Image (cartoon, rainbow, N blue to C red; front, top):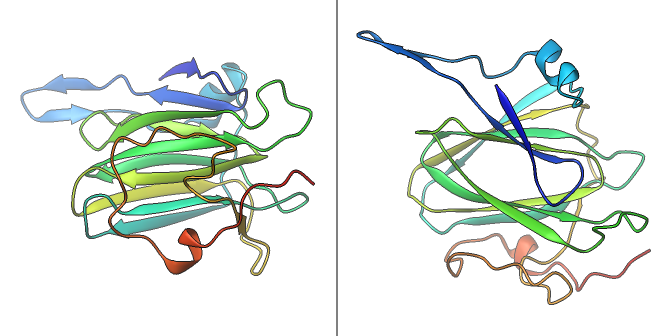
Amino acid sequence: MRFTSTPIVGAVVVDIDPIEDERGGFARLFCPRAFAAAGHPFSPAQTSLSRNRAAFTLRGMHFQPAPFDEGKLVRVTRGRIFDVVVDLRPKSPTFRQWTGVELSAETGRALLIGRGLAHGFLTLEADTDVHYEIDRFFEPGKGDGVRWNDPAFGIAWPAEPRVMSDRDAAWPDFSPA
C-alpha cells in the first residue's frame, strides 16, 4: 500500500499494489500495521455499504461532531465517484478548505478520512457501490451536515448532481461554532 497526503491534514489517499498473473490479481486493501507504520493508525469498528443506482447521485456533506466524530476509510467496490472532504476543524490551518479525489473499483484507490472532516461524494457512473470502514460505532441522531454547494467551501464538483436526498439538499449554510 502507498499512502499519499492531500492538502487537508487527516485526509490520505491509499493506493494498492496489486500482484497480477494469469489468474487475475490480488491486493492487500487494509492492514492496521501498515497504516500505523505510515503514521495513520486506523482501527475499524464497523463496515457499511452505500449502493447508488444513478450516475451523478450526491451524498453529503456529512459529519458527526465531537465527541461522536468518526474516521473513515472509503473505497469503491463497483463504479466510480468523486470523493470530497471539507476541513471543519476551526484550529486547523486548512479550516474550510476542501479536497477531492476520484475513487474507482478499477484502481482500488481509497481515501482515509480523519475526524473533524465532512465527507461526501458524487457518483460518476450508474450502479456504484461505496464501501466504508468506520472507526467507531454509529450514534443515532448525532449526524450533521453542510450543504454540498455552500459558497463557504467553493467545492468544484465535476458535474451537477441529479439525485440527492431532501436532507442533503437542505443543509444550512456553514456557520462555525
